[in-house]
Each structure stands twice: as C-alpha cells, then as structure tokens.
Image 1 (cartoon, rainbow, N blue to C red):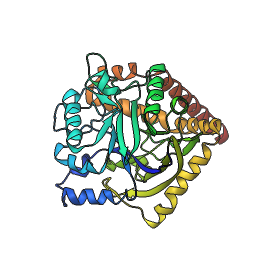
Image 2: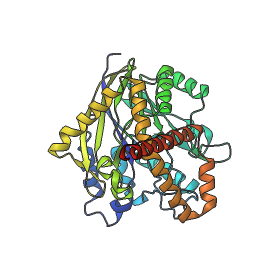
Image 3: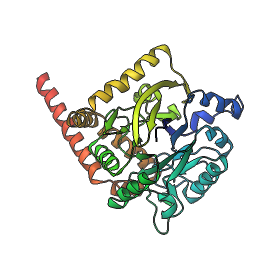
Length: 376
C-alpha cells in the first residue's frame, strides 16, 4: 500500500472559564471555520478532550480543579475527527458528565476512545477510514486517574502485557496505529523516564505514532524506527487564566503537529505554530512566534537524541518546579475541601511521583545550601 495521508494532532481541548465568560460574539459556524483554518490539507484531526461536555452541576469531590464544556458549545468540536478521553478531568462530573460527553460526541460523529461506562467500552479503539486507508487509535490515562472497573465507569489505563497485546493485534488490523497517553508532569519541557518507557513499549508493540499530553507545554518529537513520538502536544483550546502567571507565557504557545504517514510508517512531520488570545482561544501566530515555536520544538527534539541527557534535563526542571507546584496544589486543596481530601490525594501518589518529588526536594536543598555557601 503506497497511500500517504496527513494526520494533524493538537493537545488539550477545554472550552470553559474565561472562554465562556461572555456569550459568543460570533456564530458556532464562524467559530468552526476559524478552527478549520488551522487544519488545511489534512485527512484527520485528533485531540485530547480534557473536560466532559456536560451541563451537570455536581462535580466529583477530591478534584483541585474541575473542568467542563457546556453542551451548547459542543458543535464547536465538530472540526475534530477523533478525540482521546483518557485524562484526569473527563470524570470531573462523574458518570453523568461522562455519559453526556459520549452522547454529544456520537451525535457529532466524532470518534473517541480512552474512557467509557464499562471496561470493554473504555478499552475499545476508535477507527478512521481515510479514503481506504484504515487508521486505529487507542488512548491511555495515567493509572492514577480514575481507571474503569467492573462496577464504575472510568478511563482506560495501561495494563502491561494485556495492553501491549491489544496494540499488536490492532496494528495487524490497520494500516496505521495511533496511541495517545495522558501522563507526565505539568509545565516541564522534557519527558520523564516513565514517559520514555511507555513510548518504547507502545512502539515495540506496534504503535506507529505515539502522542503525549498533560504537561500543557510543547515538547520535542523523536523517532523509534519507522514510528514517531511527540512527547508534548501542549494546549490548543484552554483558558489561559486558569494557569499560574509564571507559566502563561509558556502555555500560550500552541502548535498543530502534522504527520505525513504511509502504511505503518511516519514519513515526516512539521510543526505549524499558533498562539492564543488573552483568554486561550487559538489564533494565528505572530511573526515572532511563527519563527520561535518551530525552533523551540526543533531544539527540544534534538535534545531527545540522547535519552539519558534528556532525562537529566527533566530532573533538573523537576527539581526547580515540582516541589513548589505540588505544595501550592495541596494547600489549595486543603482550603477547598479539607484535610481528608489532601490525605486521599497523597494516597494516590505513585512510586514514580514520590521518586520525582524526593529527587526534586533533595536537589532544591542542595542548590540552596550551595548558594548559601557561595554567599558566605
């Protein structure tokens, strides 16, 4: 099969907060046309739907932030052909919110995967027919984020050998296979060791394109044989005002990642830069951003050529940012829901989280001690 297709991938989609503080000044059709302008000459557009599409008012307890896109704005999503639902916010409004989301996407004809009302539904792949070129897509959330059970709806999480078998089987059924992961750490520029491990496992099993989101930042792209992995798609539609001021400049940078693909191979890719308005709606990149954003992704991609060095960059950034961010988050949760919610949150930490936080704290203390020594 010599067919070639172009798949466009963007990061997190949430139409909430300041984006809906006032009634839209233009029609849904106009908003959709604006978005379509970012995806010319593409055969498929996929994204991560970071919030349920629901009018439900009762949010899930224990969440520091709850996100929701009103049902009235669902038509704006019609520009997307496929959505990953495997993330830490899709269950913010419980079963009712997830059910509403599934219904709205189905009505719009948007294929989706990564969350469901049953284990079977959550693990079910999405399929796309690109003019006779069959593409499959699977999505996995971090195992800490509301995994589906036999009795409770939730997200599809990595199940070790079982997930690898699912990828291998799906690869044989399709001409091209996409696997999305929602995991990692916010506001960093480099993937951590667990993200590297998941990318390696997925591509060995048969994934042709691996996509990561959750950091809210753009990261580099690297090859694994004929496959490719984009470690950070950043945001695409997301309320800028919901982020700490220190990170707004970073997260306002957006991009459309375009991959030219053939049968089980990523031929090449390109990064189409964009940015956001003050609220977080995507707009055309300024002249400066049009130059700086592709150069940023190129520089971060070059850093991925040496895995060990890239992980050292990750640890250095984590040491600087993760401990203060984690502390502020827990303090906010304490004020919002009390000590019990904080304890529940801490019990959900994984060993990798503890490792990152321990190393970050240790390096922070070492750096502070060195600075005091130099000052004296």
